[in-house]
Length: 116
Image 1: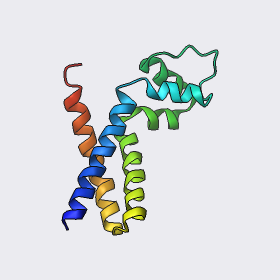
Image 2: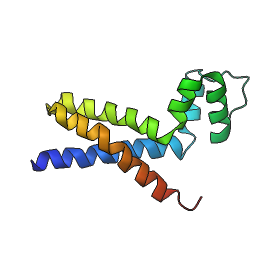
Image 3: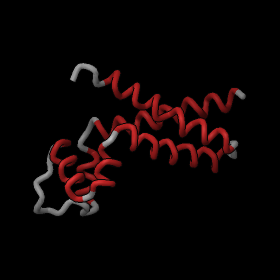
Image 4: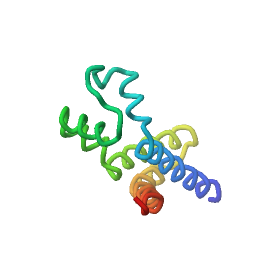
């Protein structure tokens, strides 16, 4: 039982960390430029320009990649599935993580950005 609690806390920290890296740095801009998902002729250097570029190119993916809650759900699904397969955990563990980690990640994100 203690192992599952530790796995849960580690997963919550991973999702919060991924969300922090995505929304509090220019990392996604560099990744998109590296894989040429942003054409070189587009002048995208800041998070605001990145958001506008994504949303104008695709409503669905723009919303998915610029919404803190939406993206944390997908980070949670990925993290929980990795734990599920590597650690042979229950399907209920995955469901509970996917339903609770986004709220935890959002709370951490909002507490960290309350001065902005």
